Length: 311
Image 1 (spheres, helix red, strand yellow):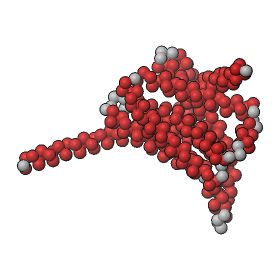
Image 2 (cartoon, one colour):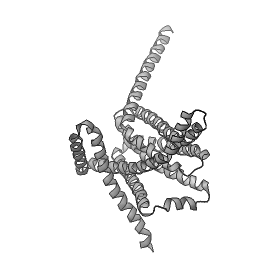
Image 3 (spheres, helix red, strand yellow):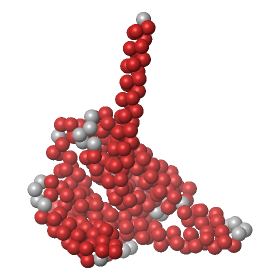
Image 4 (cartoon, helix red, strand yellow):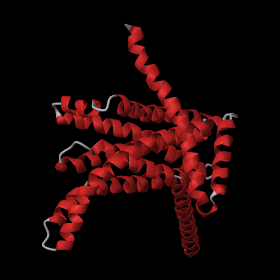
């Protein structure tokens, strides 16, 4: 009996050490995967605030919570199991699926640019025509969750690529950790941005002159910040979508566009060594954005032409 108990304790100790090593692996892999996905995370945070405008202050946080729940559903119910299955059985299918999502991002971003340039009053008219704010809220949440699905797919694909050789349980754990932490980070940041004007109003009512001045400054600055985020969010859709397409083409052997953009970006960065990394990134993003706006514009105009042909 003592020998049996000792053997059992040895087994428990071994399992504990194995679990500890696995947790270390999961933590390290999650940190590495999250770092590689940081660019898409920033884009996600820039895109989302535009879906929360035009609502009363008391509805802003509930709307963000609804979008965050949709994001968690995207990651844990749709993307995580599909990603694991594709990785195990059909890894070649991941890139085409991501490219389809990239085309959607290009289209949505290009459509926003077209509306802004050609129909500047259209968004305001759309909001004015919606008598039922609940319907508007549902429409905005649905749009945000659809966009989140594409961006989350890119994030999860990046995370999965970092642990593709690991056991499936490690893959699942890393995807879960990355998905949860990124969702908290993105929508926590969005909530802070959206409620910043309310915080400014709160400070403006304080007795301290410094607090009042800072609060009034926040209130005045937030419309500018939100407008800037709307522009950045649209640009992010186009850039990320174009980048997905360019990388997907390279995976399938059409590496020309990726090499050309990379070479131009590197040359531009080398021309200004003091800020070479930033310049290289900006030029690379611009190249991907040009590809994205061209593809998105083609899709947008093609879809717009379809109803007229039907008639």
